[in-house]
Image 1 (tube, helix red, strand yellow):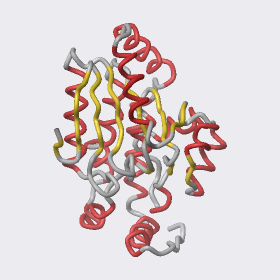
Image 2 (image 1 turned 60 degrees about the vertical axis):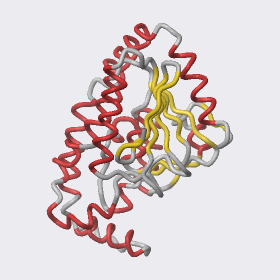
Image 3 (image 1 turned 90 degrees about the vertical axis):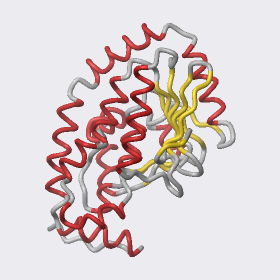
Length: 260
């Protein structure tokens, strides 16, 4: 069933949630709400024992739909927007005490990257790629990237990745521990589903409690990080560099940043 850019299907205890808003699976508010609803089902339905999160077509997700920012102009409340959208998604992904596999089938950027990083196990297709994205339009870290990237990549590599706007290929992501396996494009979803079926047949209560332990030890400051990201994004969203970044993105030209 597809609702507002989210396709969900259950099979053998596995709920597959697919980001499905062509062409690049970029998020708008209805799509965020649909994803939150699908995750609530995954959490509350006892017949769901494992979740696979993936994207349709050639993309996982390009993150926030930039046209929404353009339409809102200077009126978009960045802090409130994050608390209403991606902070809820990231918190929910971590709160569900069932295994969640991120099957990253294509580019994951911005909020799409943050959502991918919030899954428990990340596998990628050969054509997948990973981009921080925020600094390209004069914004700061959000969607949990400020905690996940330094934890996974180390502070130096995370800083390099975030500051210069580079894109990591699937192979580079594997070498740096951003994903644990890479598959040919045609095999990723099937491999992910087979593994999810295996996990679904396992001791999911014990797995859920282990996830709770990991959250407490490795991610105990996640709520604080998400809240602080929202504060900083409110500041970044009012800068001249952000206005220039959005304009350059939409006009398909290199930005001219001033640091203002």
